[in-house]
Image (cartoon, rainbow, N blue to C red; front, side, top):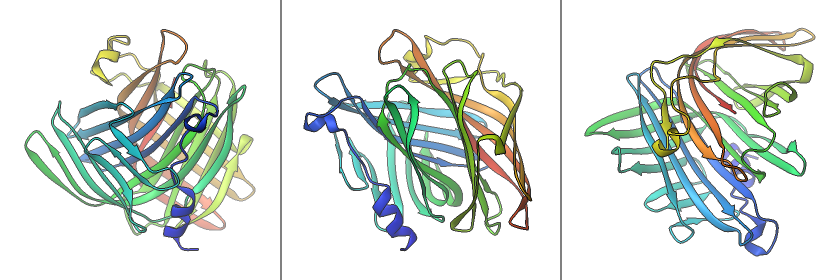
Length: 339
């Protein structure tokens, strides 16, 4: 099976069973990140249903960090303003589109205030991995498909400036499941691809905890060599240490009106994260040094409280040995902390 076939057969929209009289509460999103010293970008196409009638809404997140400053926001679409192809990889939110042509993802997304437009072609370079039924407590569960290494080319248009992207490192994941924002869970995840395209290594890590982040439920890290996953570490094979807290001079929060519920610059984002993965002769030491953060504020489903999704830009350093091969590279990462 080719890489493109694998993506077509696994990375498709599942949609809510509530649309056919089944259980409501479905959430699903396609997430893309592009990382570079001069430009970082996040685009998220998401859809969820609301209430007993399973009335669906869509949201589009576009965040770009250019020359050390964040711009972007969140736009929402009612059920008659968007189209999602169940069983396929195609979505249209207003004039914004996500497609997969059998080889590449195509992402076209724009916001009017501030003026920001992204047009990207993202070419997958490694096989996706799929984790099903990750328990979030009670009957809640999340499914997570990951493609940690793509190449992104296209344009970013902001405030009258056109910026060209050419084969920049990128990341994609796809999440879906039945759960409620505000339930007893939090998570941290991140990815690491090298700045040097000739380096064959990449990885994804995750840790799922209770809401207070005092009890770890699961933790894992998977390493790819070229297109194939080569090694996975899990549970006690993965040790995660954090150091300090990131205290930026300014924190961008979207949508801005939700940011009024979380004023100030205090974050629960570590300034540095150190991962040590070890089993037998295989070992990786990974350091992520946080440089900046943007926050997506989500209202909780059953309470007048909020969930904060921290999107953290970080420098990356990886050292170790896998299957008798030396691993050493530096790069750039975006890791996420949900609290």
